[in-house]
Image 1 (spheres, rainbow, N blue to C red):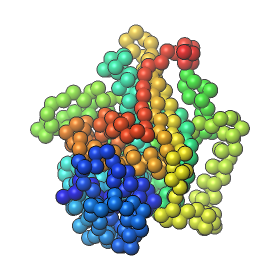
Image 2 (tube, one colour):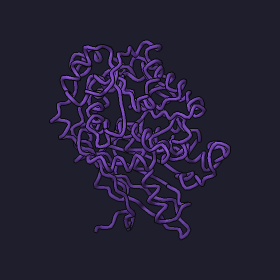
Image 3 (cartoon, helix red, strand yellow):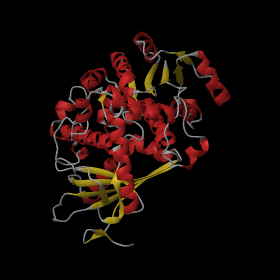
Length: 435
């Protein structure tokens, strides 16, 4: 049996994942196979990657044929799904993985797979449909900030608020990403689309509502870092809130979530972010004038794409075709820099503690860095199963941090393109002290 099977290896993002896995420093310690819709597509990929694919098994799979999908997922322990639109094709792959006890990761949190949570947990398989730019960094910086807070102020320290400021460079779009966006607009019922914007829609526990979306933002204690609504925050906040909810539920009812007859007794109270936790994020821009322009532009485009079919037709003519995306040069020129400020609820002394956490990536965030994140998540399930946190050992429909925790953080820090740091910062009059 293979360790990893990649569905959609000949698509734009699939090729990046194939390239990354084939050249991975630990390549000799795992096996992987790839799928595509036809042998012709494999020939094109072989021409691109050459000897790197000599010993990689290939499978022709029609993602629209459930029997094909079911046969394919049985070939491996972990399935990476790079075939979009995920709303259209993801659910059947998850169903097959859960049926046969295979782990699953993909890029898209809008894939409606929450109903598989119980079955996945019973089968002992991990399902993480948000293992790329959406929403590994958001989930990770909050998790790291919580750990840092507790190391400075004690294990019972709770988070009051956490805000992430995103700076992205080289954000391009591929044909597959554009197809997924259109699918969400055209295929997803409006009531379901509205539901994903509601606080704690994916969380098993209801929490304190977070800040409402607004036009302009500033980072707490560092108001020089300003910006506007980050569109993917709608997805990222739901994932972070699901992590909060799963950790909170485990803290309140550990025997319900991790029954003692199946798991050795363990203290999971330290995973909780606390009952007052609130999360927000935004995209950093250099000036208020540019922020105003971006807000007006995004509002106009969003309205046109959502309500005017001719606008979607025009976009189809202008956007990249399926399989197309940024050049290697553009991929290398991109970057991601996230600064997260997390403040505790008052501790015993009545004071609060503030932590600054950074996530820095070298390369296009949505493609190159996403390919690294999802690959390392899959490898964590293959090579570090015994080191995973409690939820990762149990299974279920999880988030990056509930499934992988410190294992994924260590893998990303070691990959050569991503660095993650966190530490307490001195604050005076609600502003960060100059160093």
